[in-house]
Image 1 (cartoon, rainbow, N blue to C red):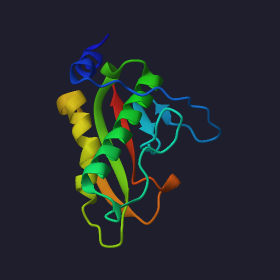
Image 2 (image 1 turned 180 degrees about the vertical axis):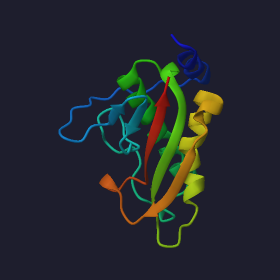
Image 3 (image 1 turned 30 degrees about the horizontal axis):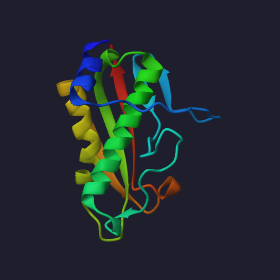
Image 4 (image 1 turned 120 degrees about the horizontal axis):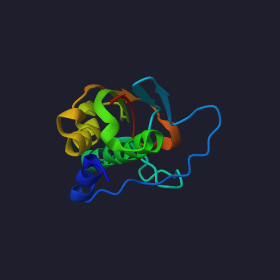
Length: 154
C-alpha cells in the first residue's frame, strides 16, 4: 500500500467500489500525464443518489457539504481505478463544482469546500487546486452537487 493509501486508512476513509458499466461517456480519460474526470455525483455503489434536492430549498449547507465530499470520494475511487495507486497523483490541477441552487442561494464555494477539503485531507499540498464553484438550475437525478476535476500524474 502506498503512502496515500496509508493516509486514507489513518483518516478512516474507505473508497467506494462501483460497477462502472458505461456506453460512450466514461468516468475519466487518461491523456499523457493528465487524468480528466467526468462529473462525479453523490451516489452510492449502485449509482443511486444519496442526496437529492436543491441547496437552499430542502438541502442545508451541512448536507450539501457532505454531498460534495461524497463526490470527492467517488472521484478518488475513479482515479484509483484508472491509475492503480493514488500515490501517482502529482497534484489536483482544476476542479469544477456545480451546485443545484435555489434562486437566492449564493454560497456555492462553501458547498464545494466539501470536495476541496477532502482533497487536501488526503493529499496535503498536492490536493490544493484551482477551482470554480457555480450554481446550476438543475443537475442529473436532482442531486445537489456534481464535481469534476483534472489530475496531473507522476
